[in-house]
Length: 403
Image (cartoon, rainbow, N blue to C red):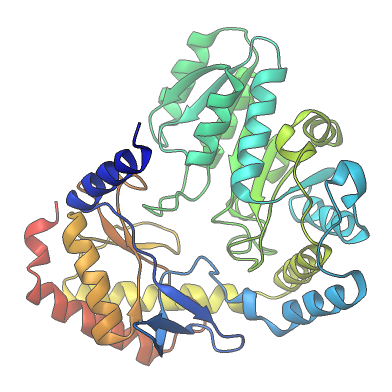
């Protein structure tokens, strides 16, 4: 069989429908965020980044950078192996204690990414709890979906953010062990789950509650513990999962919960047992970032102010965007080809980097620009972005494509 021909034909089909992904070649510049370099056609020029998940710019925070550099100089680069063989480092344990404290839990466990922590935790819980059934919000992240699938446990989907539908379906499941998996902030639409109601339903049915806070940690709550901390609900949630790769500005994922739960995952999860550990320098930088955001609210407040400014300016300009209570501003396009074209024009003509979001990340027909204002964007940056979008809205007749 000509495998390359098969690969090429499917890639051609992806390109024809407008869903082939092209990645801009970017160069982050320490201390310049949200400015970055864009390499294209042998040239390097400065652009302004509007789509980063480094929501607070902590990836270039001086304290965080110094912590990583110092740890490299003392510990070297890699971890030396899996945590089970030779890779457990003092910095890992310090970070796990810091994470447990952040979420008011007994323990925490590190993973190499938020994707892996979801995949490993849910697959282990579903496969190792006898006769378990996992009830999953229908818009959960791919990492959660894959973890549930890999567990081979029975799965029940409940309507997005509909705690009444969850209640009905938990009742229908009966007395089997139940795991309810959902997110706090949904990353594409930016909507926030009714966490209190979901937790109360879980408690009423004796279900284990599992919340993904990856787009909320560092961003919400008085110490950056996420929406569950902001609402005073963290102590009522069985497992809180998060990432170090977004608002904390580094890389890695984690779970927090009871000591028994974390030890259970540590002892049975293949995604933990057989994976090389995070470099100690990464753990040291993450610890510095978490400690900073536990004490400082300045980054969160400045970020929220810029979100409000941009939303108001978009409204005045007539640029449609999904309303939500989070820091994520989805500007709806509704067509994959047009979305890609607008993104390219913004980069080439305006020096604005906003990567297009298309299928399968979002459903077909809901293609969008996902904008994430940060605390370091200036008023001039906001003006420039809105001016560019207004020009393109007229030039590309986007309004006709928006549902």
